[in-house]
Length: 291
Image (cartoon, rainbow, N blue to C red; front, side, top):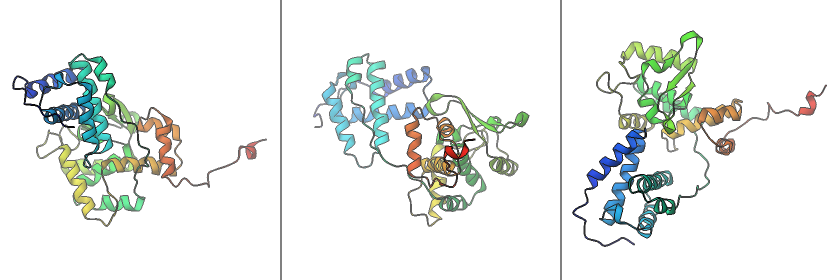
């Protein structure tokens, strides 16, 4: 139940969020992670109208119970909120016991949504601006998340000494990594660069030298999908799901795919076997290879 309390006028949520931001920045947390943890703390404060430092575990549970019944929130978002609350109480408040008592939502098994190659091509063709088409094809071909695409710089495209790779700085999980660069995408990027002449960031916003906003990328995809007859819900995550599914169909080793997707557990990668049309034509019996 919602706590009926009078607001604590001595508590400044803005200052508290600023302190949280500084601590997370020093800990080298990603901007998207900081924003998500901000939202979780702000919503907790707005729910109880008292300082989160004064709350007990039962009150935190009441808040999470309320979130789980919010149909507009995805289960993944709630998980991030829980991670934010745990971080706050452990690192900011110093209450390790309370942090450990906050239950982490159990994964609900579900299959990732994917598009057929035909459906995916329709989305690409729905882009009226060549820049947008290249962006979404790059996400699909190189397994990029939204922030990785937005912060990608021209110098991150590495083709020196015959290399074909993309350097991701401070990517998913705050890690640096390399990912694959499609030969087709490289040709398309060269055409795009000649057309748009980007500066610093590979995909500039309205002002050259400044990155494209995350909201702008979302909006571009939404408009492209509107121009198609694709019935499925399409978002940036689905583009990455399509990569995993199509790569398996084309015979990519599942351990290689696990490395590419950055999955710690092979079980996570194996989920894509259920949505991929992996052909049996390449299957064989080891007995046939005996001398």
